[in-house]
Image (cartoon, rainbow, N blue to C red):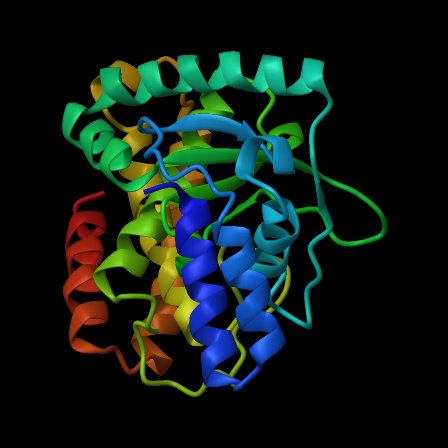
Length: 262
């Protein structure tokens, strides 16, 4: 199904839970005009109603801008920017396929749409974001992925989040309180422990991608060393503070075992 359908489903569930009849009607009215045809895997789209469906751009933005402490100001691309980003996406997917067919197959199974956007206003810049409430979609800042290699990193990064969200059905991978905050290996702001586990798992995935033989000339040793350093930072925090759920433990232990040989 298109990610827009899952976005409407998420909004409908919240509206019913909140006993908000106006929101229920709004969702059902939007559902009448959504294209239900499933998109092909990893389709490039813009953060606009014309690409996502009537009223859907605002819904997508609301779902990705869900942290009151760190705002996201995501805006659509201009036509020429989207055209260039779409070309880069095709090249990036070719890189992932050349690096590891299994990783490529997993990514194509998880991601229906790459929703391209860019930062605007005074909000902090963002690289990309994935949420269970937009299942099948990754929102990626095209400006921060100016070539095929950085975009390949971006889609591998976001697909790793999607893998964890799908396996956990959107639930946290830890039993830690969401109010706890810890230093993140990937972001300047402190994050909940669930975010730390996600980020550290993602770093392991990026290291795996960067060290495939076909990628040897594209990722310098310094970049690989950076991934190892980031994993060590995150892993130390997880080891000391995280209380993992069974799903979280299964995935995180696999990442830790892989990185132990790095």
